[in-house]
Amino acid sequence: MTLFEQWVALKTIMRREFLRFIRIWIQTILPPVITVSLYFVIFGKLIGTQIGDIDGYRYMDYIVPGLILMSVISNSYANVVSSFFSAKFHRSVEEMIVSPLPNYIILLGYVSGGVLRGVVVGITVTAVSMFFSELRIHHVAVSLAVFVLTAALFSLAGFINAVYGRSFDDITIIPTFVLTPLTYLGGIFYSIKMLPEFWQSVSQLNPILYMINAFRYGFIGVSDIDLTTAFLIILAFVALLFWFALSLLNRGIGIKA
Image (cartoon, one colour):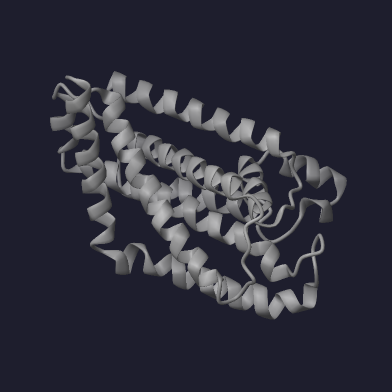
């Protein structure tokens, strides 16, 4: 296939993935907005007034970046894992596999769809957060980079989950028992400096901690983690998961009989 044909194919997959979640926006966009709004009210307004400031910022302002990124993580992951598993279940993915379309275009198409949903949800949640917080962005470039890289990383993770999934139950195990605990323990609601030294060390094994802190630095200029270290870890995970997902696709794992 020529580069132009590959671009048309990629754009087609992206458009299909975008229309897939935007048509049912009541199920895909509205729920995370309502959920995060409840976090703002309960944790920010009610509990936050009792906690006080963290690193010189109101508790509400401190948790806003983490809550935005939490929505990006869960929605980019959910979009790809559900979409690709459905394609496997209905055997429509086999048509793409046997076509001249390179596997990396298929992967990029699904990942781009996850990134698009993460971005749409993230922007919507950010707009809602303006009603609860004095929103300001300290470093726009850092915020955008972490925003997109995190969405890409968890889109890839969702793709891998879908490849190995054999039933609809399989695609809910990882989000429930792995993704949710890691996200809540990733420093959204607290600074790891508040933890005992042992638990600070344990927390640093959580990759989501680096994403949330880098994103928080982009918003308010505060981070518990060195920014360079955070970006290196995020980029390393994106590269590793992309390589692994593409290798699974090339070998036909979970797809070919």
